[in-house]
Length: 122
Image (tube, rainbow, N blue to C red; front, side, top):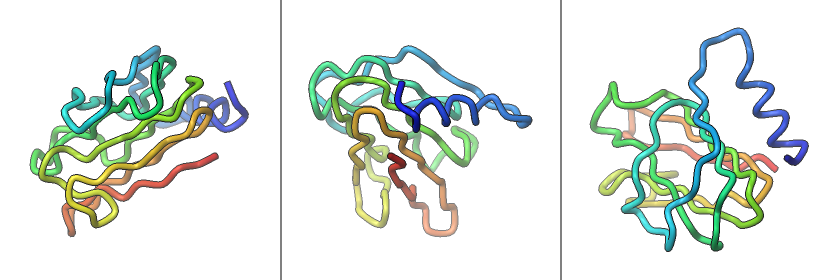
């Protein structure tokens, strides 16, 4: 684990309730058709090829996901995190964000604009 991913995993153990899903494998071959994540913190330990992916839940289903989702990439390859098909990320329809190996992606659900706002912490 890098210093960033270790800090995120420790933060997830904070005083508020979180759901951590651990030891995940990114969707091989990448793309927006990856199964959608559920829960708040997702730790990927297997990204077999650069560009393998994960997908955020639908913004249309308001009760489907947490308001903020964290993606911890503890693998040796970069991965992509996609918006749900037809949703936007950082204002881009069907957008994605690359989360480098050893980095953490933070995704905030913005209801007013039906947009996921994503940023990577390194």
